[in-house]
Length: 158
Image (tube, rainbow, N blue to C red):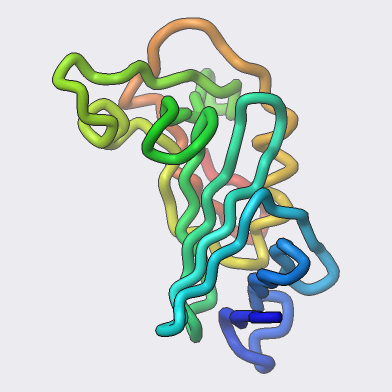
């Protein structure tokens, strides 16, 4: 069993664990099964967590850091559409698919629209719950209404 720990014992609830043997991601008492968990010998780790139907959250981190980088995808990262979290009237309203750019590069169309953010470990449970509960909205993503994944002590910041 390979387990990579992110944060430190002194951070307590900010400690993110990637457990390859059990295919789980954990923060404090919260734990979530992942489709896959990979830990490289040099400490980089990734986990792909299935959320609601056609929604997957990719978590990436490095030993010693209190946060992870998250990306929201419709399926397999870099092979499926990216997903944007849309803000309407100062509230997080739903999720919108980002169609493949005409140039054929996923990163081109996703840039600045896809949910891709550093998130403190202590906010992962809240992020996962939010992303599972949001409806899928029709229409294209709107760059200036895309939520950037920010949290404060009260929850998501819009």
